[in-house]
Image (cartoon, rainbow, N blue to C red; front, side):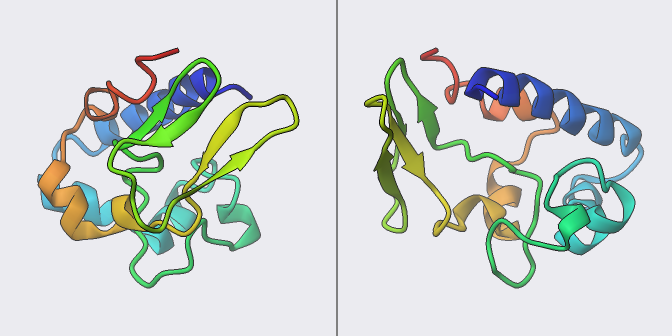
Length: 132
């Protein structure tokens, strides 16, 4: 799956859930996206839910930003626009340089989500895929 395909597919899934929750407050929507709740109520949202695994091993993991607003994609590389200290890169055999966010938890913390919240995920993520 390409980054663009993931972005489009995830955006649709995210939008569908948020639309379903439209009567809730922003805080209630954010709370709904807590890992434990999503694993139970939205098992198709993430393939890790069915395996009872987390993408980041942290308490209070929130899945609202499955994908980070600081992630950027270009023609031959992806990168972190804030050069997060817990990020790194992986060079693929084809020469593509991939941003490795597996040790970074910034977008999965409720405080960050509240500071950057918008009901339209693609608006928050607009700079992510803009370079494809």
